[in-house]
Every structure is written in structure tokens, then in C-alpha cells.
Length: 380
Image (cartoon, rainbow, N blue to C red; front, top):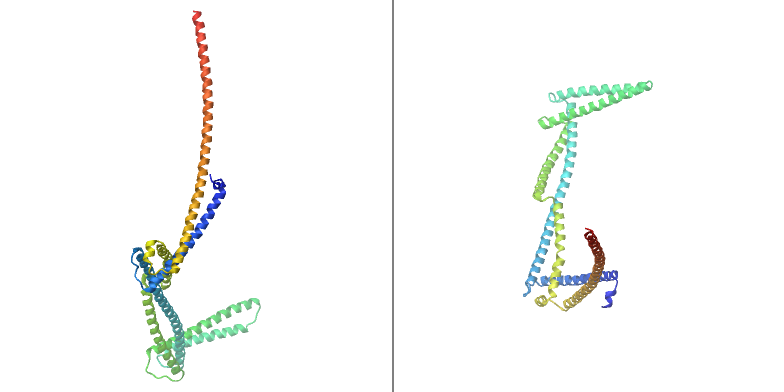
């Protein structure tokens, strides 16, 4: 029996772990060499524009898979660029829509203010039947404003104790709120008059402040109408572009999906490179690739073969060490069985002795019975 068989179980398990680690190291080194060689060979074939080398059909299959994956990546990148352009265009449209909404809001406010100025100027100028109903509303509101402002002044001048002061402040707050409310209502009257006059576009010529306000409102309204037209066209274009994406989702979501697919496809290349490099290690593969293999490739194949040899050597050593462990395990099991057999034999021997003793007791009892029978017969 060889000396190695006397190594302890734990030490042999440690040896197996070391051998497995070295085997993994050699396997990784071999795989890297063959992947690198396969990638070089594919690039060489693609760079030369060569067709599949004759003599080995599997090489053509690898090239076809490589080209299919490469084309898929190219198509995905092209789609991503298109989606990025659409996404940028969509953002530009959104920014433009937001800017136009802000401009429309500002011009709408300016138009309202121009109509308010126009209405106030029209009521001040007096335009007969047109101004009459608005003037009555104006006079009523001005009277209320004057009344509340007068009341506020009186309350401010009133003196008194703490309770009177608290009551005065409450009344002043109400009066000031009513003043603000009536002033707001007065502005609405002016605005209503201005908007109605502007919408009716009467032939009567205006002058002074009214003419200036009307001209300002006309200019703002023209810009507002043009801006609104542009806004609705832009909104329509934006909707069409968004609808073009359809059920496939937003550009960002589709781009994310395509990028994940590209990453997944790229993970398949090392396997293809390794398969082609592995084919070059075989005689039929090397013969089929002989036209593009060079001295550097041969050196790579020699290093890969060295690591493969080391892998085989590690595997054999592992197998031998495991065999010694199995032998020891079997021996231990045999010893265990032998001990069990010995124990059972001991039990059998004890049982046989006990049986023998019992048989003697039976024999003695039978002899006693015979003697007793003789006594009985003699005394009849």
C-alpha cells in the first residue's frame, strides 16, 4: 500500500480542495485563451470578408450566429438613436408648449387689463346707449366704495376702551373687505364694457385714452390669436408623435428595453468565441481554419493545451485521492460489519449455551419422572 493512503482524512479533503482550486484556475486560463483566439479568428474572418472555411460545417454555424447577434445589436442601436431623436423632439415640443402656455397666459392677462382700461375710458367718454347700463353699475359701486371708505375713516377716528377698540377693528376689517370687493366688481364692470365694445367693433371713432386702449387691445388680441393657432398646431403635432409610439410605450421605456437586450446579446459572444477557439484545438477544426491560423495562434493553442493537460492531471489526482477516501470508507464499513458479526456470534454462542443448559434440565426432569414412575409401579 502506498504511503499516500496513510494520510489523514481531513488532510486528503484539503488536498482535494487545493486540486479543485488549481483545476479551476487552469480551466479559466484555458477558457480565456480559447475565447481570445475565437474572437481573433472571427474578427479576422470578418475583416477579410471571407466566407465560411470549407471542411467544417459547425464553423459556418458559429459565424452565422455571430453575424445574427451583431446585426441585432446594430438594429437595436439604430432604433435607440431614432427613439432618442423622437424623445428629444417630444421634449422640445413639451418645452415649446409650456412656453406658449405661459405666453398665452401673460397675453390673456394683458388683454384683460387693456379691455379694463378701454371700458373705463369708454364710460368716462360717455357713448350714449352703450355706456348707460355700465355707467349705472359704475355709479352704484363708486357710491358703495365711497360709503365704506367714509365709514373706515370714521372708525379710525373713533376712540374708546379695549372693547371698543376690538369692535372698531372688526368693523374696519369688514369695511375694508367690502371696499376691496366693490373695487373688484368695478374692475369687472370696466372689463365687461371694454370686452363688449371690442367684440362689437363699432364704427364710431375713438380718441384719447379710449383710442389708445382700443389699439392696445387690438394688438394684444392679434398676437394672442396667432399664438393660439401656433399652440394648437404644436399640440396636434405633439399628440401625433406620442400616438406614433402606440402600445409599445414611451421612448424611454423602449430604449431601456433595447439596452437590456443589447447587454443580454453581448453576453452570448464569449460563448461563441470559446466554441470557435475550441474547434481550433481539434485536428479537423485546425485543418479547416489553417488558412487564417498563424504562429501566434499556434502559441495560444499550445498554452491552452498545457492548461488542458494540467486540468486532466488535476482531475486524475482528485480521482485518486477520492479513491483512497472511498477505500478507507469501505474498510471502515467492513470493520463495522465484522464487529457486528462478532457481536452477533457472541450472542449466538450465549444462546447455544443457554439452550444446552435448558436441555440438561429437561433431561434431569425426565429422569426424575422415570424414577417416580418406578416407585408407583412397585407399590401397586
